Length: 613
Image (spheres, rainbow, N blue to C red):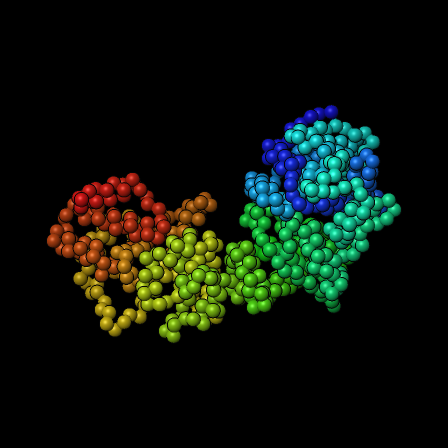
């Protein structure tokens, strides 16, 4: 026998489970049954696809309870585990986001909330310690010769592991139940009635028989094959929790059925909150694929595009081979057809929410809008439906707006959809680039997600209206008749001087038509990438030549006017180059940019201020 320590994060999680005050401890059994169901699916799949020699004639889950001994046993004859897999899967928490999980669990624990986060991070097995003083697991991997493995722990930071010579193929989990304490929502989990009630509520849809003695406790009916009128919302919600490991209720349920030359059924769910790993590359994603009710694959990415990776659910195809591989899936025309129809259905469902349930839609876009916008980069066929369900911040109101609503509000003389990107709403709204647009009442979209920097160049227009960044190219807003344009020639000497002194930083210096209160701003040429995009590329290791920008001056600002006068009085004044640096630096800071030499800028500014006091 070998005694080992849990990984540090696992120890913290165990302590939370052992001392849990969560109100819904019933979910431990749901987790054990879900794990057992996965093991049965994996064994059947290994036999179908890998030719594993295994008896799959009676795959099932067995539950045994002993009220006198205070034990509860959950046994399956599925794939089983090797010793190494036991240590890797139970002794440690290898998944990302562990710190986030622990923080949220502690917060929920202190608030005496439900255990809604336990399954979300793939650590459902640990929930057994909410109800058990000791947990014993005996397992034997199918297709391996010799002994099995016995794992045992009291949840106090260590576990023992040893060989188990007579272990049958599959996994048996034995819980030494803690004393009943209904004040702590700790019920008698050796009671047959309680067990039956939990199985019926949470696991009725499991496709393998869950037996207690000779009685099957679950109906084993595929939820996606039943008419929606015959399925309760609670049944759908529990099925969603089973396949997604998200214990909150889904935001929306989508049923699909196709008949004819190619038949399939689908049951999809849009979650009500984004998972912690939505933007992590190693996160599991994709839909469950069945063929004629036989489980084939758990995370089929071929069925749903990456920008809809948050969608959970099942697709059951009638005309695919049972031993279809991922390589074949990528090329299969039927799978591609299903994929196109699923995309269309999901996007149309979201569009319907916009009008039928604005509150649900607002929740959806807040949680998943950033991911959905990725489709504007890699799914050109669906640009229009994606843009139709998108919402963006705007200067016209506090709440996000759709592009259709923006177009309706456009001025009569406005031909383009104006936008500005930035890191936050506050930064964008207070940008110097906004001044003339706000002064003349033009609405500007506020784009603050990193993906916004990229997709705006991939989408040419919406409803015939071109998208236009107010920080790129020249601006020629229609001005009031009374407003006179400052002659460029009067400033030509100063502009030339500034271009010479700032040659390493800027490609051009010119007068601005977009500024009303600020002295200067920096803009990009129409065909140049933005500084934020350039910074993103550099962060990804894609170094390229630095893109110079254009410095625009406000001829009506006192600083610019004074600078022109000072230059006219004496172009050799040694203070002028320093003023040029300060002017450029303040323009860069105003848009949230980074100074190349902050210390020098601070010194120049301090010296200049010292002369004024």
